[in-house]
Length: 88
Image (cartoon, rainbow, N blue to C red):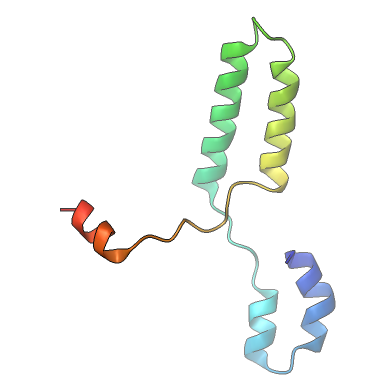
């Protein structure tokens, strides 16, 4: 759910302080992922811009969508055994 919805409508209904704290917690913001997505969009627009001028508009829409919705907030889950074996 959207953070604003939780704060405005669900927070007043919280029965405990822990419940209220979890509802008022701001959403996680992963700067590195957003920066990478913007850099990729700009690079592709610069690459394809001379051949396909509409790519600049597509890049603008892509950057706006990254700003508002962005990449997933949490990294994908991995199996600990696979993660441990790949690190060695």
